[in-house]
Length: 200
Image 1 (cartoon, rainbow, N blue to C red):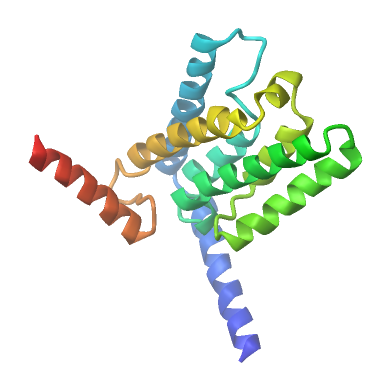
Image 2: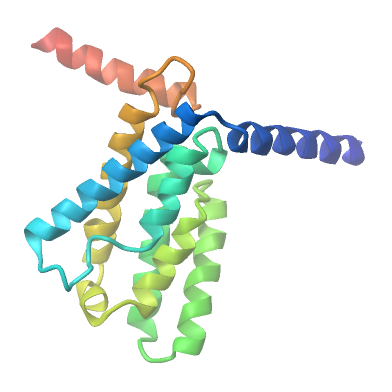
């Protein structure tokens, strides 16, 4: 029974990897557009609010999130719950670890990453770039560390929301791309917009 489950899982993962990597030029164009607009908007926000020498809004883990939410949109790790939940959970862990033990890098760095992975697994929000978000909270610049728990809201949550809005628009502009894959999320969004239209 276990062998059959493992074989079925391997077959499904091979299909997803094959499907996501063997794409035509249109798929590449949509992935490029999403990543360009998503990161571009975060960079614009940063350039309007702070100097170009202080990379506070544009954290490295957003680049990795772009790969998932624009390039591998069918992956369970790329779904909205994972994108937002994974980053926020990891940011909370990273900031908390830094506040408890600010000067023990050999302990805080691995602890932040490993705890963020476990908490993402528990909350079903596993998003690989979240590990980097936790690490940045511990090893980032003095400006990042000075943010404290504000780091969770700006840049982490604000950046995730920008990436998600762009993903919802760009990934659904054609009939052959659908994001998110969770029908409940799509139905909830439709209900919200239908209610707003009816009240106007």
